Length: 180
Image (cartoon, rainbow, N blue to C red; front, side):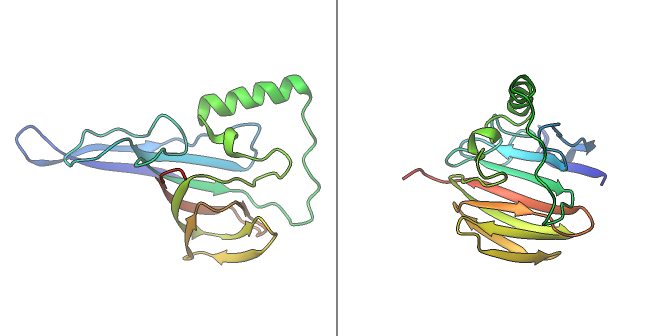
């Protein structure tokens, strides 16, 4: 999927302008085959428009009062697919370094013993743009989400699965929440 980002801003004369109109390249890692992350925007701290355009924050998941906006493409994986072979120790370490470089902080939230499961201190607004996804919660409960489904995640432990036959696209806005 070709993703285009258009950003508006206000110039020095107070006129609304297009600050950016450009394609966005996906972020992909060999350690996470079938996933393409499109980091579209992020904010840090209080925002008072007009604000200078900045495409993302410092970490994948936002801290309190920060936001992230993006798209995630998930390739189909049959429910009964065998697990991917474990990389050797050296390849695993290199892969984790790559993930940290490309998507800082993402791996810290993933559970090695439960692939795909993660918990974040965020409120997430998600929309399935295309395809069908399955949302799994920590007790194994699942719900199927066809295109057009809107999801509000409230800091829950969860995983996304694509048991369909075509790639699925999830649009998301992550809002950093205050820790307990």
